[in-house]
Amino acid sequence: MDLEQFGALRTPEGSAALDAAARVAGGDPLTAAAALRSAGVPAGLAAAALTQAELRRRAVGKFGPAARGMFLTRAGLEQATRGVVARRRAERLRAAGVATLADLGCGLGADALAAARAGIRVYGVEADPLTAAMAAANAEAAGLSDLFTVECGDATAFDVTRVDGVFCDPARRKAGTGRRIFDPNAYSPPWDFVTGLAERVPHTVVKVAPGLDHALIPAGAEAEWVSVDGDLVEAALWCGALAQVPRRATLLREKEGAATGAEARAFPLTGSGDAEAPVGRPRRFLYDPDPAVVRAHLVAELAGDLDATLADPSIAYLYGDEARPAPFARCLEITDVLPFSLKRLRALLRERRVGRVEILKRGSALEPEKLRRDLKLAGDEAASLVLTRVAGAPTVLICRPLPA
Image (cartoon, rainbow, N blue to C red; front, top):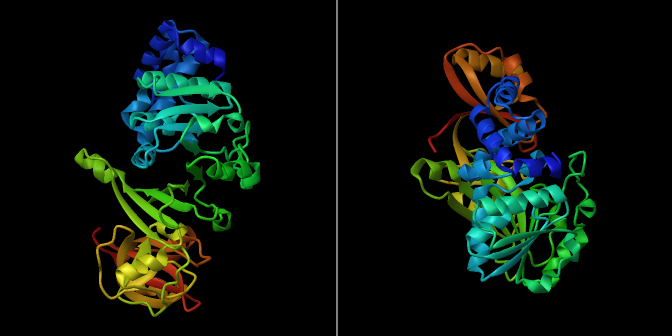
C-alpha cells in the first residue's frame, strides 16, 4: 500500500469498502474480491480494503477488539507490541510519574496508544510516511488525537528536552526486505543513540529483541523479559529512575484474564541475573521454567523458590522432591530416568502401550519429529519425553504432566 491508496481508504467510499471487506474477510480471497467488485468497488480500492480487513482480523489476537478500527501494515503488525504488554508498560510509566513521553519510532502506535489511554501526553516520531499517517489515523480512531500526535521525521532529531520520558523501539528489520537485523549498530535509530537516551532523559525505556546479548545491557539498567501465556514476546531495558532491579522476568496470563473478563494477571520474578543454582541428581519432579525466566538468567532464583536443583549446570531444567505451585514453571512427574537408547526406549513405550508422546528437549541434538517416527508408537496411553543431559550424559526422562 502507498499513501495514495491509504488516502482512498480514508474517504467515505473507502470506509464503505472497508465495511464490505470486513464482512467477507477470512474466506477465499478470490471470492471476497469478486464480491467487492460485484458491489461496484473499484479493483484497486477493493484490494486495499481486503488487505486491511485481513490484517485487522489477524490483529485482534494482539490488540483485541480495537484492531477492527486500526490501519495496519504487515511489517508493522508483526513488530507491534501486544496490547497486554503495552498496557502494562504504560501503567508502569504513569506510576513512575511520567506525564509527557516521546515515542521514537512509534510504528503504528501500539505503545503510544496504550500510554495515551493511561493519561500520558505522547509525541510520536516515525520515519516512514505511510506508517506515520496510519499511526495518526489510529489515534483518531481511538479518540486519542489530543493525547497522541505523530510527526514524520528522524527520531534522532527530536528535542527530548520537551518530555520527561522516552520510549524507543528501534527497527530491527531491514527496510524493503523485512529481514531481521542482528547487529545492534545497524538498528534504526542506531544502538549508540538508543543507549545514550538514558543519559539525556530521566525515564527511558528501550524495547529490544528477546535474544539480546546480556553484555549489551547498559550499566545500571533493569533488563526485563516478558512472556504472554508461555510465549516469550519481548525484552525491555528500563533506565534511569525506572530501573528497580538488575533482572526481571514477567509472566502475563492473558488467556486466564480473558476467560474471566479481567485484566491479564502478572507474575514477576527478580534477581541479579548472575546467581548459580545448585546441581544434583534428578528427583521426582521436573520443572520446565518459562522462557522469560531462562532468558533473564533467573533460573537460580526460581530454584531457590522451589527448593530445586539442576542436573546439569548448563541446562535449565530443575528437579525437586515436591510438586509446588509455580507460575514460572511447568511441572512434570518423572517415572523413569534412562540413558538414551532408542531401542530400549522403544521397547519400554511399547510395553506400556504408549501411542502418544509430547517431546521436550534441552541440551539434546535429537530432532523430536524424527524420534517420534523412529519410536513407531502404538497404543492408547500418553507420556511426556524429556531429552536432556544429566552430568553430561544424554538422558531421556519419561514423565507425566501434572495439572497446572
